[in-house]
Image (cartoon, rainbow, N blue to C red; front, top):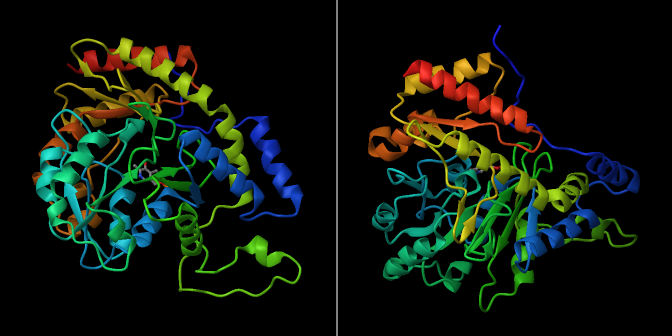
Length: 405
Ligand SMILES: *Cc1c(COP(=O)(O)O)cnc(C)c1O
């Protein structure tokens, strides 16, 4: 009988240190947003080399609240990639703005920057580039595109939009915590960057997210932070911990806002993960190097996680099988599953999903995204993988693809 293993796609890497940290919070007498969350924010800002971080209960909330912070809403347009997870686009719908999707280039998962330039109108308020797989986008180019269209930018009076003289760059950095480009960490490049700590992401709090930003001339970072805190806690002027102090009961509600705060239980898990995070990224890059060597040659297109001036966070390994059709790719996923290897596809382009199709997006208008999707297979990439398992994955895929040729 041929060999079989049991290799999950992306299990959480939790040690006793994370378990102890969570138990400490459970015993501390304070469970929701409090001192541990605030300290996790400080540690994240140090890690990203930014002034301030605001944590939330998801990256989706972080992106939506950033759009709200900027007063982006009905009548406005926001551009993102057709090749991403729904959250990059759904947040645009949440605030009532119009979703504009841009195709990728034929051979990268970044937006086609000429198409991006052409998509900017006098209604465009923001661009949401996506750091797919933890590889940072070419933000220099994105800023250049935004600058080139600054004549079209019409900020809404009396809002934060007025502090920008071009469309705002809001990075979907859900995958890229710890990535670097030109000496800057993810988070220190775009105007705003939103990270995810969902259970399958590189660093997890089970569910969670964060936003960080570049300081805006004339705007106090503390004011931005406080605005985010009101947005995610009902518009309340005091957080639960301050209100809980003896005699400090009174508060006001400044607007009927939302509920999306991170708890100390989750933050304790994340803060502990952050201590190990540089080592976890290093291990991910070891596995990527093994995969890239194993799939070198004619049959595959391997992803680029390291370049002269850049290193990804090593979040996902997106392998492409040259000339495979959609049916062949799906067959390959089935065959490797029979050998006990769980794989995935990142991503089914948005126009293929009912919600976006119903909004009028047609797959035929995004041919590059479609071509990349049909022959893509995402391999297990996580810090519980052994070298033996990585070798088995390479061998199995090589064998099955050869059989299918
Ligand atoms: C996971 C993910 C999100 C959403 O993150 P949540 O924390 O679950 O809201 C957004 N964008 C991309 C590309 C993702 O992979």
